[in-house]
Amino acid sequence: MASFKLCISDPPTKKTFQREVKDSMASPFIGLNIGETIKGDAFELNGYEFLITGGSDYCGFPMRKGILGLRKSLTIYGGVGFRGAGKGVKKRKTVCGHKIHDRISQINLKVVKQGAKKLAELFGVAEEAKKDEKPEPKEAKKGESKGHKSEEKKEHKAEAKEHKEEKHEKPKEAKEEKKE
Image (cartoon, rainbow, N blue to C red):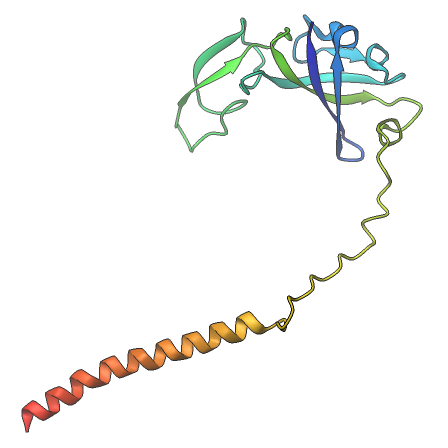
């Protein structure tokens, strides 16, 4: 039977949560189109309601609203499947249809109606306590100071400059000798 990876976006918190649904939990999605809503009760997210915003098939081709069938190759200006390369530039791209079937691997959902619990609690994601913590600085290797590489680069540049000046001076000296 079908198996889908759900990418659930929560607009108020601007976070995305992922869940994989298989068999009996995936069956309510079969036959739905982009733009339709589905209740979260069908896949253990009680009280929530979601809007289907898109997805992609097993090969990675994006779903596009208004396309019938499994896949089509279109010449498009922009939108789903092609960002657009400039004014008036069209490109031929392959996209899949707007109906969810067993060959779709990812479904994008957006929260329309909130449930009793927050999505972060349901998915077991820890709160943003890590934001306040500062990352620890990387330790330098044994025998190296923090500015070791920059000092080395400066020395290398100075040597290169001296070498370049020496090259330019030699031809001038040779010319002067020839003149005398």
